[in-house]
Image (cartoon, rainbow, N blue to C red; front, top):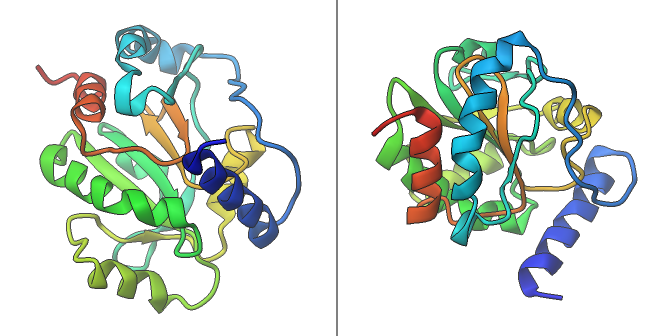
Length: 209
């Protein structure tokens, strides 16, 4: 077993202990597609051959479906939802300070936001620490991670909502979502998001040339 696999399993087990529930890791099982996600069905075919190299573990959706309208707090501390990002491609990432692989990929997510962030794309990294609310912000400041807006869900309900549609069992997890709110791809575990392979996939998802 590789060190990366061991870290993912450890983080997954800790997520279950911290957030509740039990069960093994399992593969993505999408729900039926719908007319809202018809455009996404075409886009995923373009993404499929780009799941290689540093993002080879990304699972491109077989049948893109509308995701739940995830609820969390925005940078101003006020409630917001995934639907607030309609019209923009987003990479939703769940992270916590108790999850070592999560922390490992945060600088790369910050770099990805710096490189590709704009009116048509944003990395939406949602912290789900349920204790010590100032700890995540301090960690980000200490690591000079400044390009990611701070989103948080101190109740960690966003994790449970994603898990309820059989998307995740551990941490970290990232969901690539199209402008209509449809899932394009999912990654269970960390990635080198600032690498060329990741940027090629994200650029294709955005539709930039």
